[in-house]
Image (cartoon, rainbow, N blue to C red; front, side, top):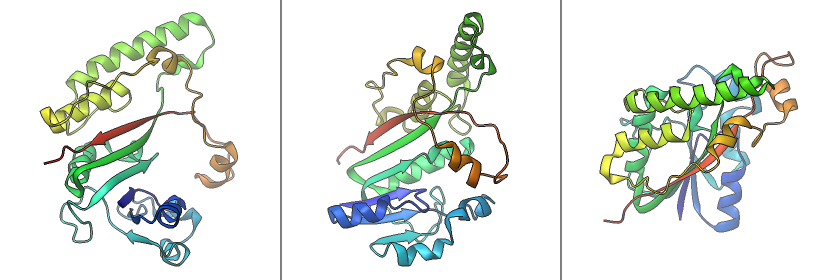
Length: 230
């Protein structure tokens, strides 16, 4: 299989996949160079050092969504995956990212994306039941409206329904979202303690380093998309 992780940065998972399963593995990541975040993402070291550390992985220092790229192969990969990456992509660029990934994927290939979501309303921070109820209802009504109105060029991606609406707008009848059922949506809006990043990592590595900072816990979901065989 030909596998690519998008936004894999300094992860050792691609090397593990290559050595354990004999896959041809690529990583596509510009390491924050174009987005101006190179200083933050270089906290694990220089990207060129990965070429020695993970010799079984090919690194493509480019950005998915850059259709002019000569480095990123099209109609090539059996599997495209991301881990806690897509939520960092600017919403206005998301449609181009998905269209590009669709072109990179072989017929019958799959995308697997692990995406983090945050509950943005401050009302959810209260333990008062009225605040929790008002926050949950307001959250649902606000995003139910925004999911319908937001165009694919600037989508609302704060909820599962928002992602579903976005994909339909980008791919139309090409994509089947009938099996997308956000089970437990009510409880997930009340309790976001599903996936957490260790506080020592946040404190030590995220700017401003070694200083107190606000941290909101995330919930995560997995999205699997299969490209129809021709």
